[in-house]
Image (cartoon, rainbow, N blue to C red; front, side, top):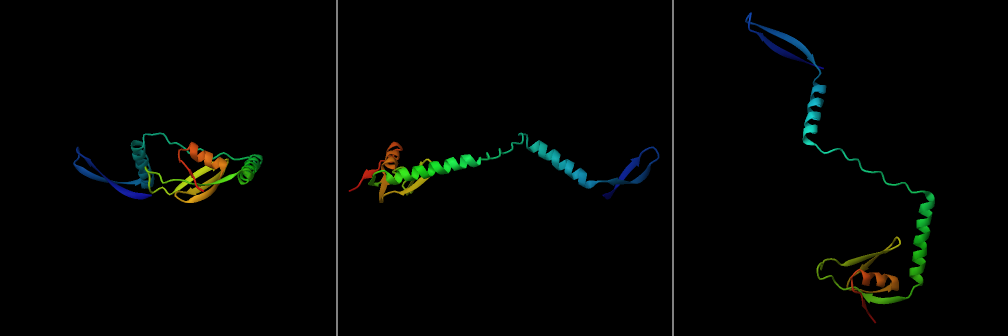
Length: 133
C-alpha cells in the first residue's frame, strides 16, 4: 500500500486541510486495466476445444488399417508415371496424395513408379499423370 496525500479545500473557513489517505494502488490499477480490457474487447472469450482423447483400441484399429493399406499398395501393380508442372503454380514442385493415413509426396517432372490406386487418385485430383515407358 502506498500513501497518497489528498488536498481538500474548505471554502467556508478558507482553510486548506491536508489529509493522509491510505490507498491500495495495485487494486486501482487492476480495476482500471480490467475496465479498459472490457471496453476494448467486446467479443466473448472463446476457449479452444480440447483435442479428443483416442481410446487405445481406436489407435490399434487405425494402425492396423494403415498397415493393411501399405500391404495392398505394395502388392498392387505399379506403373512408371510423370506428374507435369502446374501451369497455375509453377513453383509447386511436389504433389501430396493420401490413402488411409499413408501420405505420398511425389515430385513433379520426375519419372516415378507408383501403385495403380495412387495413379487413379492423381487422375481424379486433376494432376494428369503421364505414363512413361
